[in-house]
Length: 337
Image (tube, rainbow, N blue to C red; front, side, top):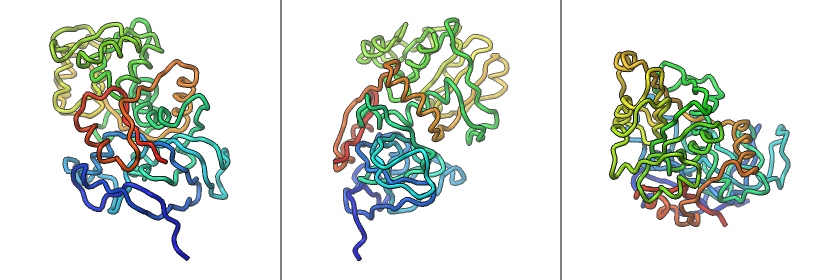
């Protein structure tokens, strides 16, 4: 009997956007504790293009196992098509969202018409939220939440020995967010405002109106002003760009302040101690409880997810090319017919 197939994006080799192939693939079957989701939309995230490239800059010991052919994607919004017998709390026909299997599996197969998902990674999608905006939420929202609000797990960071502990945010806290217009940044801005913090948003000038409309108290256009020279006495810097240049924000912090680089760079513990600051990071993990809280904040209008652009599943290559151009406002999402 022929194996049922679906349309999916698969990699048969690593490389640029051209390696993303729209083709037939077997429909996966849910195993114990899993559900089969009929995908309506899939969010695009940086790990998608890291995996597409084969993660060339990641040490082998930090790479999760993945083999070709590979279906990219971890962020999903869709409808439950089938459930394993041991799954409780969900029924067929329900709308769900999730960050699937991350980071234990770098890519979980969301760029497809169907994907299997651990039921423990899924949250119910609010009826007020369409699939496009729902698919844009999981990884970016959970990253912002776990960096700023609550870590929610005790897994050690692959980047450092020190555990990440978010500082309390309130009206006496000043937070600077670098890369504030991106997927993580624009949600982190809103979460910080939700907690009452004073927020300074850093992005290019084209995003100023967008970020002020989301609640930014101050705005710095990094194309005309170096933020590390413009501000001082900051309680917390969330650097969503991160990497080797993240150290430049250390002088902006007051003693007792914290720097959270989303993409960890090279820091000197002695320098941090001398300045009296804390530098910690974490790796986002799937968390259905936190995702449910985020979905509730969207449902009530407390949070808003911005969509930079959408592309049909078959145009995943074009979507990755859009991501490579940068200056993204919100999230890029694939729609699945």
